[in-house]
Image (cartoon, rainbow, N blue to C red):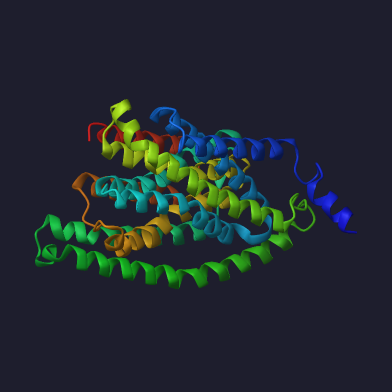
Length: 369
């Protein structure tokens, strides 16, 4: 019996050729990226290899999430994947703060939100729309996520607004940022039980609706969870190597720190969601795609940014929520535009193209710093 179980867990029916190629590529890419951390091969080479490693590991996470989706439901899968997917961003930000790169961290926080609500969501709508036609998703769940994200972003921006208009609170930036951070973490804690209850209801409804047509998941549950967790942790390590090579690469490539934080670091840190969301949209799983893509910026606003503000004094550099005006403006515009597109519960490829166009314009505005 043990031999039979082992054969079943490792047979081609469990891991097909594509699975094995992705896992092998991720292993090789991670080893090569790790070597560049200790062997000098040039900053640009180290930068490129680490980026490739993160992308391959993200693909492993994508396949694992796809296997878990049929068991956990869209809501729970999105929360789990986003939590693991945001590990690289947390480590990137902590190491950058330790190095005193506050501007890069602020830009990366905003860039991570913009990257998901504009770039990744836009790509998912384009790819899914061209392949599947009009993408339809649960508008109720989408409205809940977007509403929470609008409220979270509003709370994040209050310290910046207080500074811009020179209110008495502007003289207490750190205290106001700490208060906003604690409130956002409390809101996140309150939202988790509701998300889990909704996910439980979704699983029951989906099971009844698809009982006759659904194929059993190919991977055993233990294998999907193990690969998801392992690839998430390795993606965090690869992202650390990526950031280690980033600063010298910035000088070689002649790009500004603001652009590096807003675009390059944000995309690298969100590589997991980049791959997963587009894969799910291309497969016609719009609910899962939207949950994965939008849960990430929601967790960045509700968890990652507040945690970084609260722990920053312990890593040697103080971080507040007082952001430069252009970052504030682009963040507000992007979240509002994406919310307007999502609220009706459906999307076409042209709406995705419009989101991508807005992202390109915003990226260009930070090219010079």
